[in-house]
Amino acid sequence: MDATVFRSAARQIADYIVDYIENIRERPVFPSVKPGYIKQYIPETAPQSGEPWSAIFADIDRVIMPGITHWQSPNFHAYFMTAQSYPSVIADMLSSGLGVLGFSWIASPACTELEMQMMDWLAKMLTLPNHFMFSNGGKGGGVIMNSASEATLITLLGARSKILAEHGHNKELITKLVAYASDQSHSSVERAALLGAVQMKLLPTIASDNHSLRGDVLRDQIKKDRANGLIPFFVVGTLGTTGILAFDNITEVGKVCSEENVWLHIDAAYAGSAYICPEFRHHLNGIEDVIEWICLQVIIQFK
View 1 (cartoon, one colour):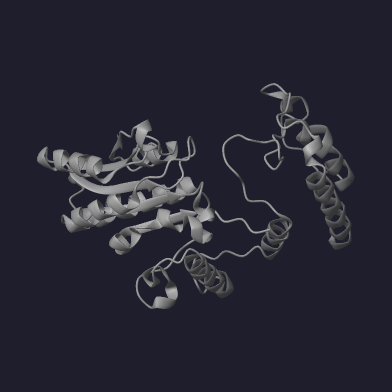
View 2: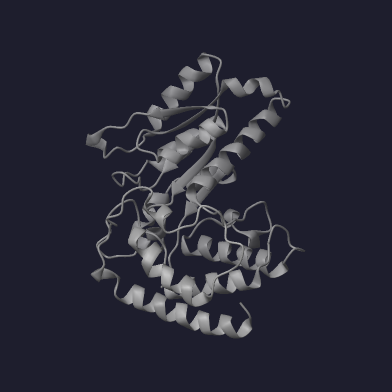
């Protein structure tokens, strides 16, 4: 594909995307294909030569679309909302076209500095304390992760490294480390503990309390575990569980984490974007008590 063909293909695919988005409500949300359907359309081995764009474009409707679950459809009510809009499509195209990596400032200064500025924007929109911001000049700041699951894993590993450093880097203590979350938390929370080789205890919640994790439940469990020689080090508080939209009591949980010197990670991936609205920000009450060991994961959508 040369530059001329690319220009033509880009216009064609842009029109295709617009038609898809504008007419998506007319499509069945869930595909009717059976597992393994795509094998009949794809060669067993990679081709020796490329195909013309016209053939590839034709395969979108012939091969790909029959197996697509249309997440952006207004009739899609499974899982959670995903962030898609015309600006995000254009941004993805530009990002792919530039093809740069931003793993350090010198690798691409604009990537690092733009991310820092966007994270400060987000902190201000959520009215988070200044300690969360790069502009504060302290240890605060944010980073954009690929997914909420990755964010939980990375913070758990960070908390694990911190607690091991406090105990002289004795790796044998890993078997004594214990983390906590609500029994309504996302499956990725328990999976993060498995990948981090630490214990994860899912603490009980009750329907009469809207399945909110309360501070006394956490405090009692930490007390029991310390008495049994375990080392509490990490708590995941959820603001908007995927299953039933439950909200943990961060005011109480945060106070316990502060008292016990335990890292608190807040999973707000499902409902976090709502906290831009002032009427919902009360769910964030309590995070200022544990400012140095808190991570907030939020998915924001702009249209």
